[in-house]
Length: 256
Length: 326
Ligand SMILES: Cc1cc2nc3c(=O)[nH]c(=O)nc-3n(C[C@H](O)[C@H](O)[C@H](O)COP(=O)(O)OP(=O)(O)OC[C@H]3O[C@@H](n4cnc5c(N)ncnc54)[C@H](O)[C@@H]3O)c2cc1C
Image (cartoon, rainbow over all chains, first blue to last red; front, top):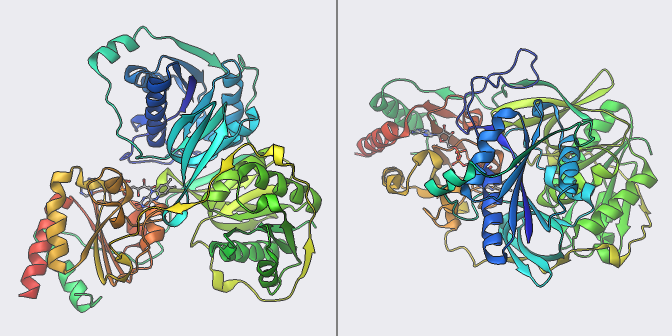
């Protein structure tokens, strides 16, 4: 089975974000980057499936030159090779444009299964995988907790709201968007890191792929959210704030 | 029609309550644009649901009733919604942001060379243009987003962003919209939805809850929050990653895929405040947040905030509570 995993690099989870002077995206210089968390689980699911079924795991990543770091880490964990679509202004792409870019690269590969994370931790549209499936004419399922090969197709467990789940079966090729936290992530071994250095990363650009990304959504302005409540911030040393809080909870909020 | 079409959602013949919030958003958008709102319901045997919609201030209620829509599949719902939108030609199509909408609305929008403005928290009309507000970076920043290209434009609204009790009553005619669906077009085979084992812990009736998130770093550190919970006579709860890791059982998870709670006191320890967590607890009367990041979104909904290291603050708080209780 040939599995393609689409991954994205996003600002590390505890980054302090500053808005660019254009007001349309964040300053990229001051943050460190890491793999989008749900994508890490998509990669893990892909590696596990390929260990059972044999075949190849190809990582596909659109992003600036610096995304090569995240790609290397995926190769070190066991992906066989990678395609890096070099694209700088990811923040300006909407899910349609991003999926158009990815679709053009996928067409040259014809995988049996495509996995993505269910959403990105930066823009968080939660659509790129679904739109990619549509552009490629593939069946898909979202928020996937488990996937196993079943005959010539795949059977998956999908998360619904309020503690409901559902099994879905579909023929291959297909696309799944993977939920975070569904398995234990592997670490790259020393051997894996060494091997990754020799693995192929094919670099392409949008124009190589014959695509001019044309987003329809545009971010007009980004800003810090307003508070919906009057928050009393308590300050001081630990013992001091603890005493203040207890005081407030007892006499102001009356919940103790 | 040239106005706003709200595509509502039902699950097994009952409304998803967030459908009313989307309807409120649709009415609001239509009145700001000086146009009309219609609403559609898709499914099989949906007559009574349509009747209920007909009691709202709407231009029309559209029913898309087909046996292939009895169980949800992305292929059938996309095809049906596509035919509906092509026939009605609305300018804006609004959805409630549900898991089902996440599953098919992006596909639908792509068929119109559009993308969905997903999970919008607000909307405003400025100079004839609609700006949708949505969260970026897990709630750390907001963005105002506009739609380009020719209509229809698609957006979904976040749970809790619009108020169901603001849906204006009225009366609307019901129109059945015929669609042709071919069983061969459905590529997925969906089995019956199911729930996993019943919950042994019911957090919904707890008066006080201490909830712990990934800021706790390791399972071995849970002791300090357990002690705080004990001192406060509170139940222990957690964000999803803590339960995913198996550090606490799933039944203690709060949020969109866990329990919804409304205690008198909710203490969030090392929880960032992602929307999927907030929907499960923002009904709490008093919310305390302890987080080392003063910009963490959890502080936006907290009554009392302490920006600091939980490993210092939690033990001190436990001591202070014990002292106050004598
Ligand atoms: C479909 C779907 C369903 C979901 N359902 C749920 C759900 O039901 N419930 C849920 O909770 N999540 C749910 N999530 C996940 C959600 O999006 C977030 O990823 C999750 O809530 C984050 O958990 P957290 O706040 O514990 O972790 P993080 O976001 O990692 O936050 C950790 C916080 O701890 C703080 N911190 C770190 N160290 C310290 C310290 N020493 N002292 C003080 N503070 C510290 C950090 O500043 C940070 O704010 C769902 C996601 C999806 C996509």
